[in-house]
Length: 193
Image (cartoon, rainbow, N blue to C red; front, side):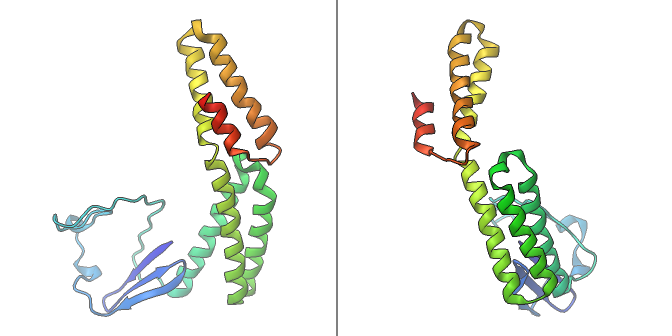
């Protein structure tokens, strides 16, 4: 979560809701920005490299955001991300853990006690990371399911083989994933056989 707040006298960089750097030595002021020099992921100078990452959300404001608003946006974004994960059927196993972490984070934010907020957000981030990591480990399984469906649809003569692959993949999901077990080596060996 990165925010740059800029006015005619300074630029401030916030990371995860906290001020990380600031300077009053700026050569480009908001009033200097014209539609011809507004880029995301690209500099106005052709010799500068392009941005190679991903950007999940971009917001532009017509005023310099104050610190308390930036901090509030960070908290709200963390809660929103966790809530979306908890609602997703893919993260069913983790929904209770995520909901508990969300509730604790909301209480801490409401209390305004910085140490409580930091601790609650750390717990929330850990819960989200555990859920995402577990699901990402199942990506090869999803590929096997997609392959099986494609084979059954495009090559009817291979229905028996495709159906067998599909049933194997579903069996792994039903017996392991939905029970909260994550035997990654078992999945990888099933897919490579």
